[in-house]
Image 1 (spheres, rainbow, N blue to C red):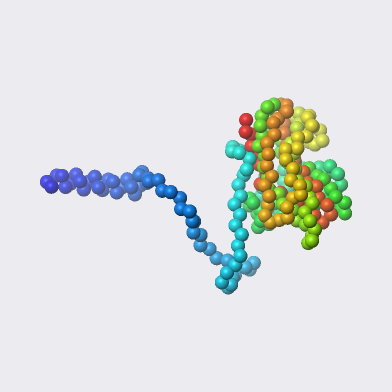
Image 2 (cartoon, one colour):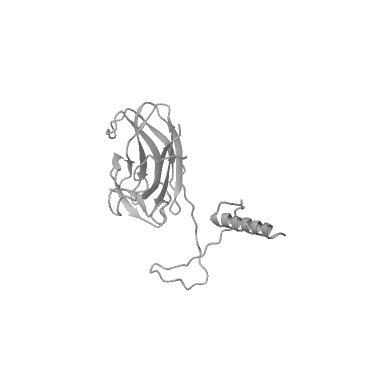
Length: 238
């Protein structure tokens, strides 16, 4: 090969190496069926566990309500400290006396916090915990989802009930029960299974009239029962 040809070939080869190294060339690679993951098993004090084997449980979570921005503020309750009332949420007692408090748990589907609903007396109670308002147009379809789970005394069968309910208002600042249209129960889970794991609850609702919507987490619990909610999502489908 003449000297000039050798120089041209060498230059081209160097350019190809530069392009490959810069990432401008890419090749499609099929994803592997097995994804290895290396880690350590620690006890509650952060000390490595000496046992040779251990039972493990893996959980994959996602936001079920379609795509687009989530219209719910503080939907994972991460803006509140454990032991506080959930920031931006309002509790309304439909029957009985309930309480809502943010709780930290490693089981939370999103972050570390959930909101825990409990009755404030020996009697069963039903409550609406509802969030911020957002404007809606008649005929819009809203997709909603949340995670919920129950905590029951040992030997007690699950009996708590959870629902996602759309509340409709004429004005942005209106609070329940000052509604402009009847409530819409989107979906109900009864009974709510024992934790862990959390159970998904999801559905969709068509807006009945122009105005404002708030999503209520409806909880019915008996004495010594707890419901925990997390990752509340509302998205506009149409």
